[in-house]
Length: 491
Ligand code: ADP
Ligand code: MG
Ligand code: ZN
Image: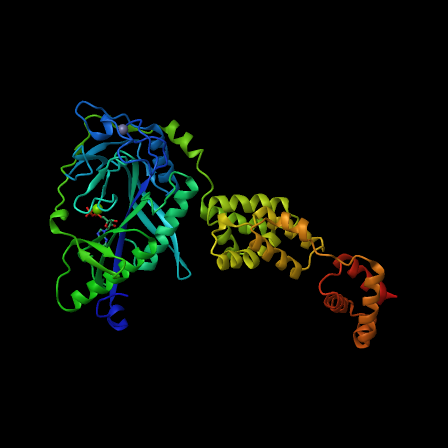
């Protein structure tokens, strides 16, 4: 809970939050940005280092071609203009986990600029500008509590030094914590589609710094911004922004100035604290990296990279809705990841009725996943299994009640539909004399409906089918049943 004296809704409505996000993303290359060391996560400390990433005298960086391709691909997916020439620069600062004393980054000539992400909040879509996307290398890690005996000192792991990153800087176009949350969700979704990063926040492959200020509505200038650092989930970023917005409004309301500073978010307390001011004095003395030539992404190379760009989430959503006749909500769910969308499409293409597959996902799968706490990719019931079930239902071999029971079994035994179906497939009544007896019974019990039917109201047949189905406890073979009902009524 925000620990500020809460600002009233009336006061709050007089202010406009302004937010810009800086997101660092680790690229999924096998090796580091400027040397051949492995980027594997989780190895023993300081086992993936060499003279280049340790910055030993005389060692020279060589740019990783794959890192450039990934950065370019991400930039294209984010609708950026790719600069044919970009320049690496040294960003100088001292920190124990940065043995070189500088980070190789890009400064005034980044690899890409002027992009956008379309977000969707409160039923409306809005375009958030991306100022720039640049390449840089990561620093190492300081472990304050990573070792059993480390209470009195900090250990340094330099395995991460030199891992390739992209930094994506948004325009200050975001106007609420919810918009910030949606921006991050869309950004992650797009990056995952391009497969340039695993975007795993726990492992630090996606990190976000949030800049936020407030101003009175209609004020011509932005207020002083506060940068909130080291927040490790999208939900916490939203909470940290909510807190900051209220805190800043309160300061302004009291007639105080909001100091421009960097703050840290404490998730346990739900509040932000100023960072020690020493750590905020930024004077990086950028200058062009003398050991690397300017980076040229030629037209030909750019076209080669563009050819590997996958269909992106927004486009895929639209196409799925049109091609399979499913609702926008269904399309949204089914395109949440590229893997899921691929699975859905291959299953739906093979199924007799793709729309039924989509409906089953929405009506039967999602709830069961939720109830069992499983993510989509952990589902025992696969898209292929759902497509099989849809086909059985389409062929009239499976009532919806039976289908639900079989899906329940899939989750109980953690088996896919085909396995469960083979073992437990319902005993259908396909014996016509048994079914005929039931049809006769229902016809005898409903003379009024029989009269309606024979008077020309043919739709009443469905009523009889329903009644017999009930009588058979859902086990009547639907195709045979339909046939018998019409035959008897027409007799
Ligand atoms: P810095 O040089 O301090 O990093 P930048 O101008 O590069 O500042 O902006 C960094 C981020 O802060 C960008 O995402 C930008 O959109 C955002 N930003 C800039 N000014 C403001 C402001 N007054 N309020 C909120 N966010 C801002
Ligand atoms: Mg900054
Ligand atoms: Zn190395």
